[in-house]
Amino acid sequence: MKIRNNYVSNSSSSSFIIVGNNVIEILEKNINNNEKIYSGEFTYGEVNKEILRQCKYESNENKIKDFIYEMIYNLKESYITYIYESEFNQSNHYFHSEYNFIEDFTLTDKMKSIIYETMKNNKKDKEDELYYFCLNYGEEYDKEEKELIDKIYNDLIANNKEVYTVSFGDNHGNCNGSMGEYVEHEYLGEKIINGCLNSNFKIYQVSEH
Image 1 (tube, one colour):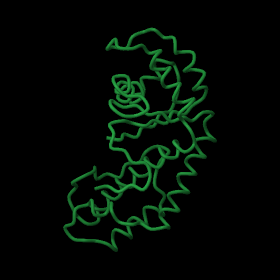
Image 2 (cartoon, rainbow, N blue to C red; image 1 turned 90 degrees about the vertical axis):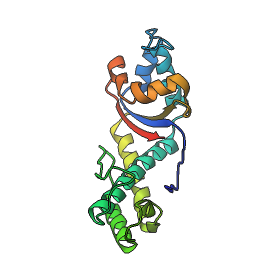
Image 3 (tube, rainbow, N blue to C red; image 1 turned 135 degrees about the horizontal axis):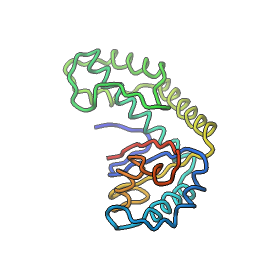
């Protein structure tokens, strides 16, 4: 069982950060697009209107920082598995063994060092890697993590005129059902939105399945 000390979800949904210039203005100009998406259930305008609603009324600093926390947590999971396999010569049971770097989101060297030393000092032969997700990595790690979250947030705000977080899924999220599923897996998930709106938004995704 994975243990998380912040946002927890068993839902089938994804959260997204949308960053760029003139996000609200561009969405507002495209809420009357009556072109139907491929399924014919709703229009692109209706989708844009829902994204706009969430950007304006649901997004806030705490939700953006929750999103950043999830990105960092996912990198922590990946790094734990990488150490488990590369240093302990154990086979992978749970996550991909490669330590995945995500543009604009990465663990600090100090965080990686704390994870490595904690795992090494608590090494249990032939234990499943899930054991290491349950370790307490200590106050120093928590402090470094919080400082990293604040830094990433401040960098995003400083480098982009607008930063928003939205949530979509097939049965959970701020918007669910067929529209939620479409946006999660295609419109935002595959960045179709930039082609439809002639925009240049940068979009990050955290899946919560």
